[in-house]
Length: 150
Image (cartoon, rainbow, N blue to C red; front, side, top):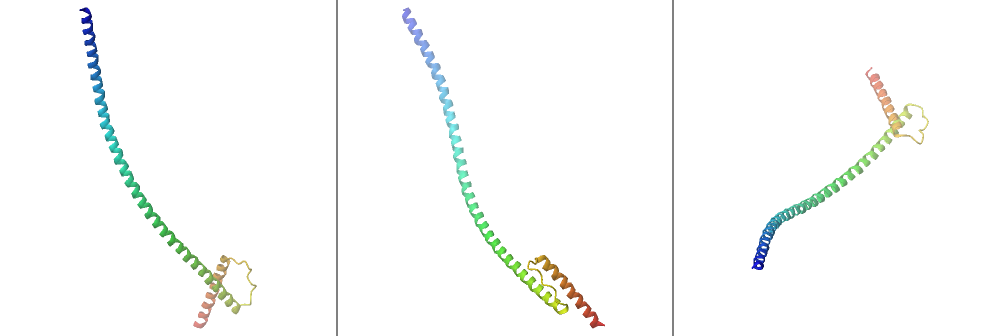
């Protein structure tokens, strides 16, 4: 009888241990299920964020293409303006040369021939000479008008 009583007490202890273990395992399973739901939410949020990022990348690619086309057009326009400006500068130099020739011819008519200009004649010197010649022509014209008025 004592062996039966000890066996039954041992079975009861094992049943209590099994119940406690089942309760602990049940709690762990509940936590895992809760974690699984949290993981599903996290995965869903990651999928949404990935979709948003892919759309944003697509928009950025379109914007980059637009910027590239706009920049290309602006560069072509700037190159045309630069070419036009270079042509206008060349035309301005040609006009300055002609003015210098006219002034030199006018100086030869009114004055004795001066020494020729050095081969390296800077554009600033030519401008100064042209300005001085223009002032001299203006003064002569003013004197002629005064003489004609008198």
